Image 1 (cartoon, helix red, strand yellow):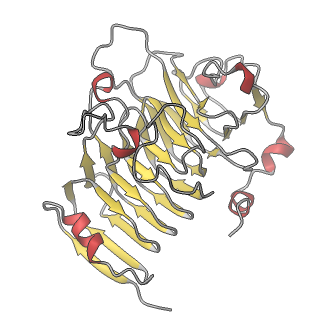
Image 2 (image 1 turned 90 degrees about the vertical axis):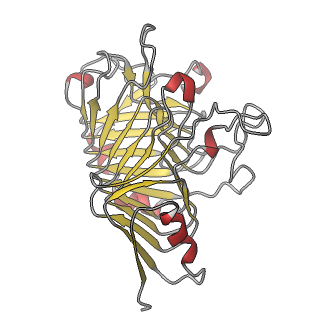
Image 3 (image 1 turned 60 degrees about the vertical axis):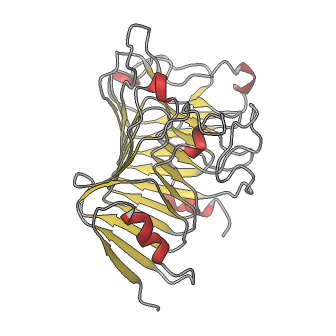
Length: 322
């Protein structure tokens, strides 16, 4: 087995991206170890079999502040998919013990602001904090077609939509509107999913959405939350939905999760897509806490024990061919 390349990096102007650019593109496994500190930069990890790790999420932060509504020199808005603080683009990438943050705010001024643009099969994210407001975590691929012209403008706008599996363990993911979104099959285990209020002007009624899946048709899994905690980071009671469908085949399942009082009684929202009631798969098993006490929307399923038992990590990982 080839020994991995190991690089140690300290904070400095463009230090992380410079280290990534030094790695050979020959497939050799690599580990980049980030010393504690704030890495104020926008970075792309476009290399498979690479691990990026910090000392701890509390001490090692990658931060940038691009918002989708910013007007660029060509007169166009930046758009959602050019805002990411960190973008991965490769298979078998691991992120560990990091905070990845997009601090563009307030939300009504910045618009969408991705912290992590996660693209690549067999992505593993452990013991990380992902922090922003709208669109914190994008789990690629994009849907097949955009609804608005230039809605997908960005680095993967015309790339093939490749099925992929992501795993998130012991992470804290913060945001307000659609703050986990995209088409990947993504497994979240023992994570804190924290709804916050990113508005500067709080005079209007508040509503937030933890997920907005765009699961491709015929993909067995979308988002699975296993033993996670949906926590209230300062939102009014009953103001936050577990998810809504970015596209009509969205799948989001909660297994044995704890739900705070901020979760709306209906659980999920249909985004006005009544035609999708028969195509989405929004389901729960073993939910507990004040947010689990509501009468769910008619299109939300409560799984039987036998159905829930079939949703295992092994089955999840085997659901997409190698």
